[in-house]
Length: 299
Image 1 (tube, rainbow, N blue to C red):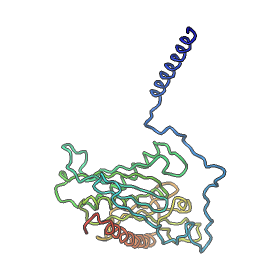
Image 2 (image 1 turned 30 degrees about the vertical axis):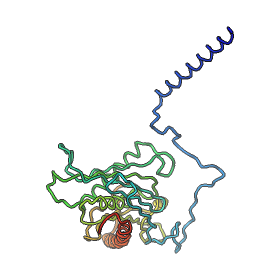
Image 3 (image 1 turned 120 degrees about the vertical axis):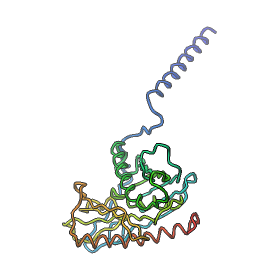
Image 4 (image 1 turned 180 degrees about the vertical axis):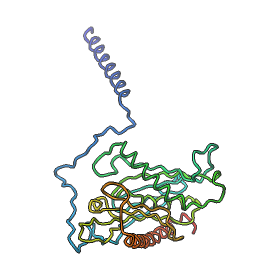
């Protein structure tokens, strides 16, 4: 009997020590954050993805011509709590956007802008495994600012600037396979604003075109380049365009090598601008058809 009591006491002490150790470990780690490895490596049984080498006169690695955009999958209204939402899938790029509003502005507005934009990348949305949160924060801020410049001119001001209602836009990048541009984010945001009944002068369409490097055999611009194709480009043009008004809301031309303003001949720039506008017209028709088929907005 004495031995049984001793064994029970020992087991009770072990249980208490285990409970205290688990409680102390809970205090040391934040369970709300993902504590997985920073990098991931594929199994040797599954070879990594390879791309065929493009020869002169052939198509791009994914089978498209230089002037062809990737096929788009648009689903409207996936977020039921939002006033307007859109899920956009372009190749491997997957974006979900939700618009909340219009809602009254607070008594002490920090800005007179009618838009409040938040862009977030999922931890493994970019190639190469998990990215540093500091690097992602810089990238998210850059895209948010470019989105703000692209969408704000399309908002129709019906009242005074100080009393404009505000709309919260939340974009989540689930997967990213494009250059650092706002083309697809602009389209998803514009569709969300339209479904939220925000007064706009027209849908804003984002188009991205890449200029091949001087050493490339073909100097024809690449429309909607993938992240893999970025290495063979010298500059990238981002165009935000309202086809209904024939108006450009935002435009940027930057170099790939130093992430600064790119250089291009004036005649080539005019041709490239008209080239991107024609592609925006095609994407505008696809966006309008998606709205009509969704039955979520009365045109």
